[in-house]
Image 1 (cartoon, rainbow, N blue to C red):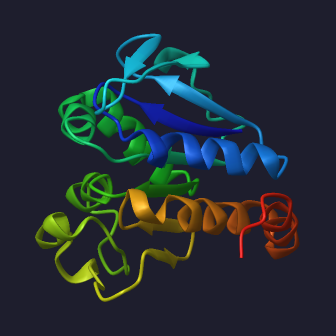
Image 2 (image 1 turned 120 degrees about the vertical axis):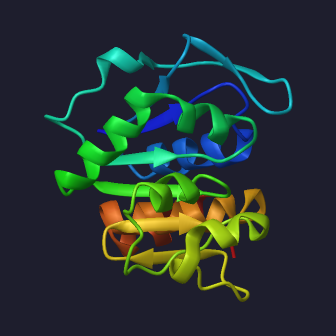
Length: 180
């Protein structure tokens, strides 16, 4: 099971594009409402989560995805239970991915220390030496995937799918949606 966190102010395409692509690739994904069952995106779109935060299980967790968006990332960071979850996921060796401003959560928790990562350009300073910058929209370092911004949501999603199900599944999904 892949869990994707939703908190007030999340970026719509950074959250729902991975859900769509992963489900097309046969991955079981659950959106998780952190503060409520229905969460409003940074642009006013309301999404009802599949599960409550209290329903997250480590027994079947394959990956945790953290979408960006503001004030969504700030709201996630302020939540001690979210920080504890991310730390526990990392300690258990469960795959992690974060896009846009969300990689700063990983950086603040020390998870990106010694890793390569990308994020929204204005957040780069918080990533310190982990930030690789340049034209790369997606970075994979071991079992951690980071993405730059909403414009990279499809490529980020395909990289996540590749890590979870392999390149053949990615090729099949790309063909099905006419992605070239």
